[in-house]
Image (cartoon, rainbow, N blue to C red; front, side, top):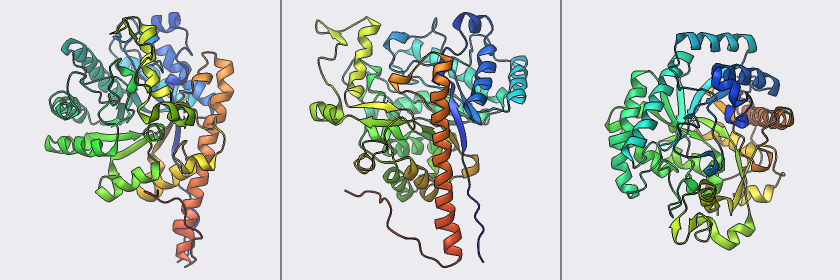
Length: 412
């Protein structure tokens, strides 16, 4: 029987940290939910369908100063006061007025912090994020796992069981899924650790998921895959998805951040993929500097060898794709459909803007940049959906072979 051409498209969104100061701080501090209302309206202008709502500790409460952050976070969802039903109704009214919905809530922090009072503060905030997510009617929260800096990676597995699994239990009680973004966060510390978010690669995802299954929260642990971090670590999307498929864990991918990475070949020549290991400027007189602006230099571990890409801002470069030095967006979307057991029509692609040279805190200047990037992502997904439907459904139903080989996983 001839199958019709019915391409399945993903849902296109944008993380609200793309413009932290859309609503000026003095206005949003007095009226916190104004920030959400204005971002929903802005997302409609950008051409998105969804927003991923960024939550963070208020700058007056955070333990990491903004001056020490490579990519400043946004507390678009302000939780200094409880997010109650009245606040939820106000947001629902804005959703109805704009037609823009919320895909999930994102809070990106170190939830295995070695200092118990600091860790408790972060966990308490995450529980408030969970409660807000329930009232907003979303099914998932996105974030990191983190790392206890005083312990080895194997010891951090014990920390995960003791400290993180209870958070997953709390998510389960609320009917939520926790999706982990896999950034290794090398600049989170002035020490020499590169992997500061232990859920940074498929091998650790599987190890952590097995611990989750042991404690009855396997369904709560999923991955919000971001291809930029794969490029940072010399990986490519198709091989990662193939590995998960081979190991029986392809179900772990639950959503996507759409952010690229462009490798600087000169930086790799100087420092390799381990990044800058010394003389970064984050240490002064043989000691870690206490000055936040100096601590920012810890990120030279990463930025010496690469730079984030806002999708569409990097030149089309097939050779770079083959060398895993930038994201092959079309194959990324094809591989997701070919190798992962996704409900494609209910899978979110969230544009995350961290291209340093375009991180403009000016609404009118940033607007056309984000419009173009979101349009690029939508068109790439449409192209991948069309190719997949033609090659995997229409042609096979008529016994017509597909041409060529395509990108192959594990090829060296």
